[in-house]
Length: 274
Image (cartoon, rainbow, N blue to C red; front, side, top):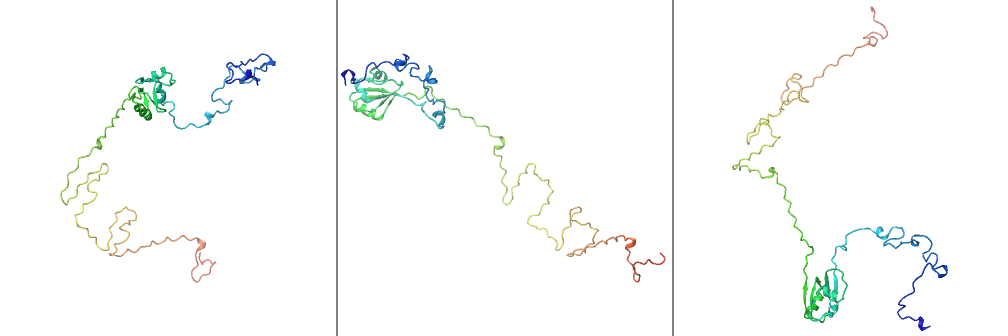
């Protein structure tokens, strides 16, 4: 081991990689890029998500749900331990913190967290202050001024109520009919299109029943199905059915050869004189 080759933290200026200086240098000809292909061409760079032409992972995975990553509020974070760099009674806000180089600016909003111990009496002005940070600042004798900014620059307008549609005229309650006297039934209103003409049904006297004679059946009007004309049968006595009359069957004409022989004659012989 030689002292001139021992380096505790590495070389301050490492040797530059010299390519294209002949094949004897080890990085000649193709200059370490190999033969052909996109990587051997000028201007090539690894694109994020590119997997050499195959379906990338971000396209293979299903897309589902919602994320608040692009809409969340971000803050420049400061811990109370870093505020010990200020003098007692100082007013600490985002501009003062950035001027002291305590943190790097992330956004225009500052949030104070409670990591560490605070030994200075300070007035901290921030957009958000955690509960532990507030307790430590007040324990050291300081105060906290938390900014109350609206979430939106322009307040949201209240939605106007949509007027309801007017109710149709027939929906209104109709006038109630007068109440009937005791013992009387109220008259029913005539239905539209279904009213029956008066006289279709004879009014029956209240509390009386029409007596029907025993053994008699009401006569059916002429022309109905199943009704028999009055002249066909005579009037039958009460309780008896008229006897059914059978009509005589017409005699079928007989052929000359089919005539039956009379008694005493033999078949096959013709009568004399014919």
